[in-house]
Image (cartoon, rainbow, N blue to C red; front, side, top):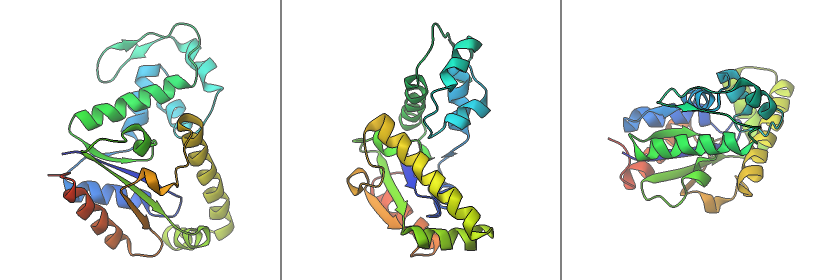
Length: 208
C-alpha cells in the first residue's frame, strides 16, 4: 500500500491534488483526521490541535497542562503531568504518521511528512511549488477571491509552513533533496500533476 506525502506551497494545488491522488491509488486521504487524533492524545480540542497544526504556537502548552488527560481515539489515555512543551505536539503527529505508514497507508498533505518518514522504501515524497506570482494567479483563478486578500493569505501560509519545518526539523521545506518528485503546480493542469504523482507512486509499489 504505502504512503504519498505531499508538501505544497500555497496555490500550488496541494488540497486538490492530494484527494485526487488518494482516490486514484485507492488510499485514504489523511487531513483533518490527523489533528483529531493528536488532539485526543494531548487532551485538547480539535480546534486547538488544528490551530497548532504546522504552526509554532508555544502558548498552547499552558492550556494543555491545565486540561489533564483525555481518551485517545485509537485506544488508551494520555496522562499529562507537568507542563508539556511544544515537542509533545510534534511527537504525537510523528506517531500518527508512522502508524499510517505501518498500517493501511494513505496520502498525507503537509505535517512535514517528508521529514518524518524519510528513508522508507514504501513512501513517495512529493513537493508542489511554483513562482509566487504564478501561485497567486492560480489561486485567484481557482478560488475567485481578491488578489490582495489571497496574497496576504499566501504569504502568511508560506511563512508558517516554512517555520514549522525549520523549527522542528532544522530543514528547508523547499529543498529538492527531501523529495522524489518536484512539480511546478502552476505550470501544468491539475489533472496532469495528479497523473505524474500517481505514476511515480505506482513505480514505488504504492497503491492498490
